[in-house]
View 1 (cartoon, rainbow over the protein chains, first blue to last red):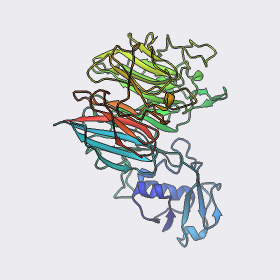
View 2 (view 1 turned 60 degrees about the vertical axis):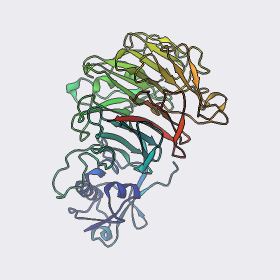
View 3 (view 1 turned 30 degrees about the vertical axis):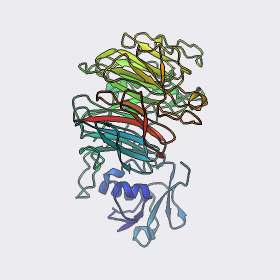
View 4 (view 1 turned 90 degrees about the vertical axis):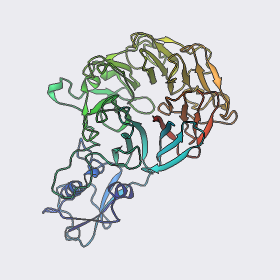
Amino acid sequence: MIRLVLPYPLRRLARLGPEVELECREPVTLRAVLDALEARYPMLQGTIRDHATGQRRPFLRIFAGEEDLSHLSPDAPLPTAVAIGAEPLQIIGAIAGG
Amino acid sequence: MSQVQVLVGTKKGAFLLAADGTRQRWEIQGPLFSGWEMYHLKGSPADPNRIYASQTSGWFGQIIQRSDDGGRTWFTPGGETLPDPYSPPAGASNRFVYDTSPETGRPLTTHQGYDGTQHPWTFKRVWHLEPSLDDPDTVYAGVEDAALFRSTDGGRSWHELAGLRGHETGAQWQPGAGGLCLHTILLVPGNPERLFVAISAAGAFRSDDGGRSWQPINRGLKSNFLPDPDATVGHCVHRIALHPARPNVLFMQKHWDVMRSDDAGDSWREVSGNLPSDFGFPIVVHAHEPETIYVVPIQNDSEHFPPEGRLRVYRSRTGGGDWEPLTNGLPQRHCYVNVLRGAMAVDRLEPCGVYFGTTGGQVYASADAGDHWQAIAEHLPAVLSVEVQTLP
């Protein structure tokens, strides 16, 4: 079971609590996690990855603990601690005005 | 007694303002979708319980919300949480992908950027939602970068009407200060083949075949910021409006100039007349008097506030040319708000109600066609759009 922390606006959009638990296919990659998330919560399609390009939205970053995974290939294996659910994968919105 | 519901989109959420037909006492519901930019909400003329809303964010992109109960509850069509995680979603209501299929003959083109270089079309947000006049499940979306989409399944899926973006002038379109946005869609009662749209800064366009092909309708517009002020495209049209009883008469608030066409846009003439400034954003037509129109003059294109700090709506009862200021109940000193292009609307009661919202977060209403005004909401986030539902 993968644990995932989403930004507050997306938690509200999908009516989720502070952390989401997801079944995820092996190997556990960012693409696999987001595929599982969007399959379970379709209203989140397009909010983390752009519909047209499939790219991560530029104001979002992805962390495991303090490790910045934002620029990893979406098909690279995620750290073991994330893959076994020992620590959550965090999707963080940029701190910006507005 | 009839009721009125005002749909207000703001920079940080949406609000629903409701009153009975006297339009004196208002109840405010909201914020809905707080924290998100609500570019536009609009009810279906065919089913007033059906409301579509454009919810958008620089962080998380575009969401389409829909209500089937007049705004009490909302959902993302096709995006509902699935009981079975392996069942396919019913749709993707926020999937606005430009049509690049060879079947359309309109592959993805490029448009002009601020610096004059060519840029590929990139979807950013939905500015305008225009529900069909007779089918609650059909709705048009005007988006940035400028293109027109249509859904025929209640917003679950969207398909581009690519003939507009693929028009031979597309490479000359350029963004205005708000982006290259398709911000106005007008449908014509009794003539589903005819549509009008307006794009900043490309101009106005008309389709006579249900949106398949388009022609620019900008003859008579003059824009001094263009190398050729009379160019076919490139004009910063801020808003167009029509009265359903006379759909060949169009009114336009351009960047500068208030314009009028009596031939469905084939030609335009200026009707700014005695306005204190002919710069502004919205223009609306009285519900029962096709020659009565309203604008809100703004000082100029860098000082986006009313001339002399006095918030005045101007009304013409002659279809333009001759204008009178409407000030009763509006602040007449130290007022430096703006009224954006989508932030003015009328109801269909008698006498006609007129409504507008400001970037200062006020929503003003007049229950007597503009003679008297009252603030029906104050201290909201900056108002992006105002629409009105007249309910039985």
